[in-house]
Image 1 (cartoon, helix red, strand yellow):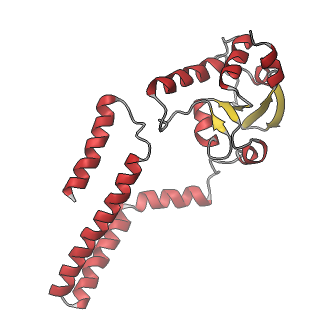
Image 2 (tube, rainbow, N blue to C red; image 1 turned 30 degrees about the vertical axis):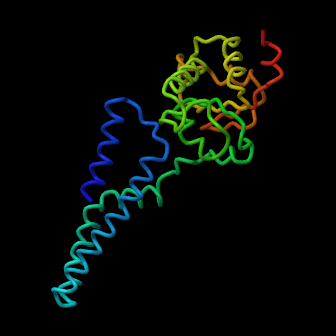
Length: 217
C-alpha cells in the first residue's frame, strides 16, 4: 500500500518539477490500481475484526467509520445537491454542438469556453488543460494561436490564416454581458462565416472555408 502511494506521489512530483502533466492515462490507471489495493487493505482489516469481535461491535465500528466519512464529505455533498437541484447547469446551451458540429470537425474556441465544449462535439484547436500525446511545445503554440485569434487587435487576414492553419470548421465564442475592447467582437466573428446558433451565452459560426482557402498564398 505504501509503495503505491509513494509511486503516485512521485509521478505528481515529477510533473510539478518538470512542468509536464501530459501523462496520458498513466495517472488514471495508477489511481484505479490504488483503489484495488485500498479495497484489499480494508477487506483484510475487516476480516481481522470479524475474527476477534462479535457481530454487533463490528457493525458499530464500520457504521461509525461510514458516518464519519459522510460527515467529512457533507460540504461537498450538500453543494453538489444544491447545484444539481437549484443552480443553472454549466452545460446549458452547449447541446447545439452535438447537433451541428461533426465528430471530427475542428472548432476554434477560447480556452474558457472550449473547456466545456469539447464534451459535446467536435475537436478543439487548443484547450486549457494538458493534452495526452501532444508535446508541450505544440500545446503552447496552439494556445498562443487561440489567444491571437480572439484578440481584438488581430486583423481578419491573420485570423483567416489561423483558420487555414488549423483547418477550422466552426467558431465558438461566449456572449459577454458587456462589450470588452480587448476581445474580438461578435460582428467580426460573424463576418468569417455563417451564424449557425446565437443566444445570450454562445455564438456558433460555420466558417466560410472557401473564403480562407481563396486567401491562401
